[in-house]
Length: 151
Image (cartoon, rainbow, N blue to C red; front, side, top):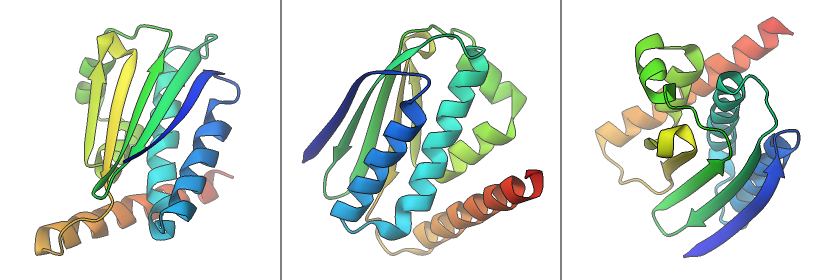
């Protein structure tokens, strides 16, 4: 098991720092094909947090844990968002839907101050996992198209 940690990163630089660690992990562990999926999911989570905290000053601690089966990202920040999980379930926002489709597990803890996101990086080759991989790729491509259209 390998562990990488970012401590006390402000909301102005957290996105860049997280994406750099994701890129390094993908390079180091031969997960280059998963970089787009993981980085998009992490950016969606950060965008959701920023939207719900209205861009207020915030500090993050992020722990990346890699083992033979999963990449787990545990993210903590300063600001409480007690209604976050309920609002996300009810709203069905694009960001929440993309995050749910790109990850294997998303947990919201401590009144929205902590998130745990997991990616199965070496799933068994079954029809269900093949479909999950296709769904993830589709969600990633849809997001890329949306970004290109908006620019």
